[in-house]
Image 1: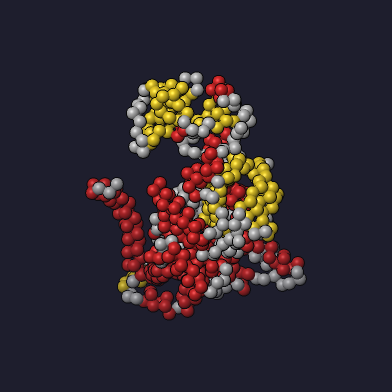
Image 2: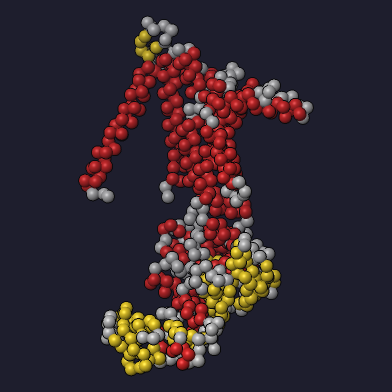
Length: 290
Length: 329
């Protein structure tokens, strides 16, 4: 399957999709780049013109921007830490032979099928609500003051909700990786005198590295763009406490109707994503080579 | 050092008795081979000794101490697995050092032992490679290295050569035998290959359906099989069994005669050659003899017999006699 003609045929056949994907990516990117240097406000459509880096400077000079940048990274990092850690623990747990294993696994996977706004609403109204929520009921049961999650700890609450949504994904990938570990390796380690913790540390965890890498890479892609959960719960507030970069761009585009600034924010987000991707691939990329 | 005593060891998986009850003594320094067809419980028995399976009842003593309920690590045994079970993300050095590290041995002593094991096993140049970069034979040696550095009371081998090609298998067989000669440690070796059993063992334990059929030195089993099963299992090609009138002549229900104990030439039996395999050193013939059935004959050297030829055969060696229960008379 690697004669000259077969290689040529392979290239010929992937060419249309490569071209299509390229256009799909290049055209919006180029348009965004173009608008990011323009004055383009929907509320005053007659005022147009080149503004140089003004749109970008507005972002860099806005105190909200640095908070949003920090919030974005905190969201990605926080959710990754929680989902990978809990994912490993839950995968280890449901890998044990127990009665009703199939049902248990479906329960664990279920949150992944809940749409983000729905998940956020469930959390907001059924768990975190100061009057009707389960958490406040529990707090009152102990005679404590209910915690106002979305007001006092908005970013933590969003991280919690998003973690709940992504935990099944991490668990599922890690579980399948766990199941591909040969039992003879674990038995050999047992004979070699490794206790349960040593077996986890020296056999199971290294075996899971590749799966963990996949989880981190895929989740990072999706977590950088988290929007729906914030929109349905905190709306970026209180103030700007839970505003992330995507949410800030949304506010510029839809609330302020300033397409130029929103486009500049978009370009910043693209650059940020590439910086994150660069460091991720440098740090984790070698785990993907067998 | 490494005396292992099994008393009424029984293992059941749910309703199924895999091992109904075994009594066996393995002396210190012995090379014992468990041999039997697949599913006979030989691997299970080894895993019971290793502690990887719980015994349903009975006791396992190692060096006179009851080890029935000890965890594997506390039994002082080392095991070489069929798949080698090397740790793929560790270098050869770390693989071999792993049991030492787990035992909390200091680094200098670890290094010293690993170097020594590597020297014995010809792995010195490969210590910094990973298992994935090694050939089958080298992986096998790493697995053995990981076992010997612990200086265990006994080695357990679970079909260690079954993943190697034929030539390498012969070589590794000799290496393991030599290792046993130099270490003089008890070794328990599980295989379904009776050639491995015959060539390596001090003592062979023939297992069938979870029961011990016979225990003895290789040639003792070859010359004096206790029953039909052992007679048929030990020796290659398989012993010929003859029933009916021919057996009655020898005052037995069944008689057995090994292929190498039948001479081609003159004799009382006449038959037609079916399959004939000429190896140069030996010739294997399947001969359909009237009134007896098909006999396998192993004739030394080259025999000018082809498919369809009529030849005469004569018994030229021991005839084994068995009663109606299949026991040797």
